[in-house]
Image (tube, rainbow, N blue to C red):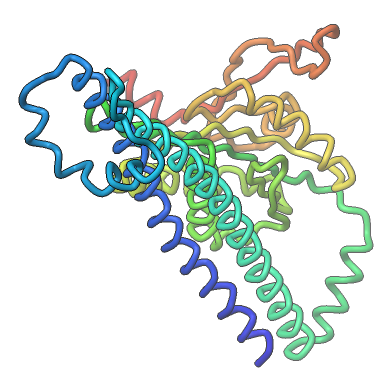
Length: 332
């Protein structure tokens, strides 16, 4: 019961923060826009434009508030509107800081909720294995202690987020908004590929990675992941967001080498090959040993994968090409 209460509290906090964030973003826009209007009308007022009196109702209350400490009597220029513009501009920046703070809180709560879901899922799986079939659990433990010779498949993916601009004056997404959309895309991706039951999954430097026990699963994985990514791209377009992906595949023989390989794959991600399945030379060697090939491994080029700018570490990178699709295009 305590756990359920904590879960409900987290969700309530997340919903409340999301509502507060929407309101704060609205007021941030109002203050910035009002500041812009104030400075424009003050500038026009300096030139004594006649039709400005039609918009006096916009500034009645702020003008009275400024009048409590500033009286332009006996002064050639009235700076009341400029003062109003300065104050609302300052309020806009204050609300902008609040938006950044709330965005970080939302991200933290979503990460906490995701960790809770994963922990609950693992606990449920462990309990089910222990209660239903303790002998099977013991055999799995024994087999896990034995050395694994089968190469494992690793996949790492990075979403790229851009706003679909309907008008020229549409604002770009902020860094916090981009990060929030990335989390939503990754969450959707995890939901859609839960059927594949990866041996291990997680985030490496904020990029989602999956590891599968048997490298031979690669063709089936690619068969399902491609339409999955396409469906996510279409789904998020409804929210006015353009999504594209960079992804890299590789293989390892021993789990101890996972972090080192992920570090290399993360560097490859930074090259920003959009909507291509880039593979390492490790992947190519392992894939070439398969008896049946559904994909062709094509050389992409040699690239410097060193993180030290003074050291060159050129390595060949490859891309996967669907052989059936290529043959069909040739026939057409």
